[in-house]
Length: 65
View 1 (cartoon, rainbow, N blue to C red):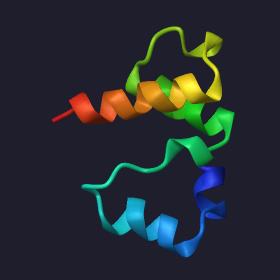
View 2 (spheres, rainbow, N blue to C red):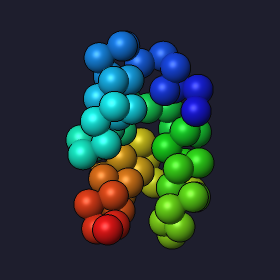
View 3 (cartoon, one colour):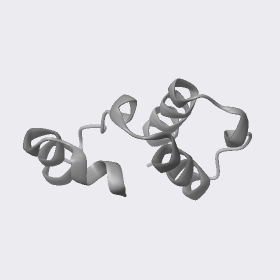
View 4 (tube, one colour):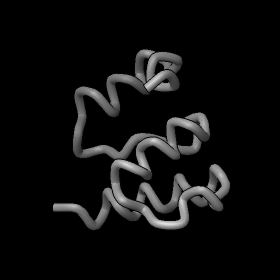
């Protein structure tokens, strides 16, 4: 994802090397959030704002095993 490359080194390490920590979706671009939401199967993603997509993705990751 394009936004991932723009994150600072510490932010990349957080999501890359520490999988137990959730990435900060609030810093991602909308198209990246949308793509990830599509992969996660989040419905009605086309009508969601960046903040709504970020919350939905956080909830989806929290509920996944």
